[in-house]
Each structure stands twice: as C-alpha cells, then as structure tokens.
View 1 (cartoon, rainbow, N blue to C red):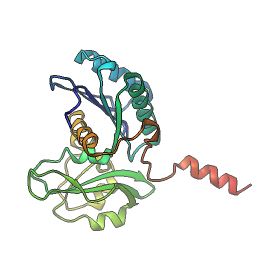
View 2: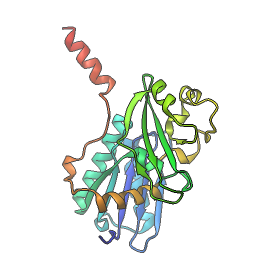
View 3: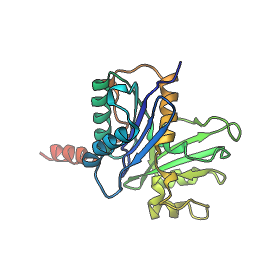
Length: 237
C-alpha cells in the first residue's frame, strides 16, 4: 500500500500535546505544547500553526493518527475529538495508536528490550513491553499496554531492559527501579515525538483493520476517579 502523501499524527495522553505532520515531499514537521498549558486551549492553535508553517491545508490530509492512551482522561478525549472532527472535515482516514508504543519508538535501535512506564497514580503504573530480534530490527509489542501495581511491575523489570516513559518523573517509580541506569526524567525521549508517531501511523494504516472514526475509543484501562466516586455515592443512597 502506497503511503498517504499527507499524514497527521497527534497525541494528548500526557501533559503535552505532540503533533507530527508529513507533507507530500516527505518533509516532516513537529510541534509540542508547553507542559504548563492545557490541551483544550492549546492543541488546536498549535495544530493550526503547524499546518500553516508547512503550507498544508486541512483538506489535503489523507491520513490522521491519534494516540488512544493510556493516559489522561481529559487529554485523550480532547485529542480524539479533534482528530475525528478533522478527519470528517478532510475526508481523511482515521486510525488510532497506542501512546506507549509511540514512546517506545524513541528508544535507540540497538536496544532489544524496551519497557515504557506511565504513572497511573494510586500505586499503579501503565506499562508496555517491546522486543527486537536483533539491534536495528523492528520493535514488536509483547502484548497490549496494561495497568498493574507498581511493586509487581518493578519486580518483573529485567536488569537489561531499557526503561523509558513519563512515569520516570515520579520519584516513587524511580525509587522502585533503584540501582538501574535511567535517563533523566525531563528528557524528550520519555514522551511521544511527531516523527515517531508518523512512523507508527504508517504501520497501523498498512496492517491495521479499517475502522470507522466513531468506533475508535480511548484506552483508559480503568475507570476515572470521578466514576468511582459517583458509584460510591449511588451505593450509599
């Protein structure tokens, strides 16, 4: 299958919105919002500015990819809504990708065992594991992203694994991996990049099943605290 001439990718699973765009000539454009700002306020202006700087009109985009999480409830909803709206307006195909896999693709190509971790709060982590048959080979997921207790996850992390992800900003998670060589938590390797997201979107579009935009759902992995509180109140009535 020939690659789409204009591809857009975005992810709002974390505290920053990450956007990637590939133009018809192969030129790549990337943008990232400030961590102190909000997806709802900054995603669309950032997207509009990126398209303008690339000289690309929304109607030219043929393929859009959006990160489905796991991650922020509010962020994931905002990202998916924006991607759906643009896909409908442009008549573009929309695909979803795993946000932790987008991060895993930042790992150096000589790393054959990659683990991505996110902070799920409440003593739990989001985690995903990937392997390569040999340095430079394609990165393959060992299974779907999951949520599990930090203690159980950290005990299973093998000594030679290359661990990255936004979860390493948590002192508690870093402490659970004491004795390992870890990349500084502020390094951009721990969050999705536009370039790597575009690569992942190409792969999903080539090998994934065709799915209607309305059938894409965020991968929350668990209920929100607000939902738990609502049910607790209901049971107390």
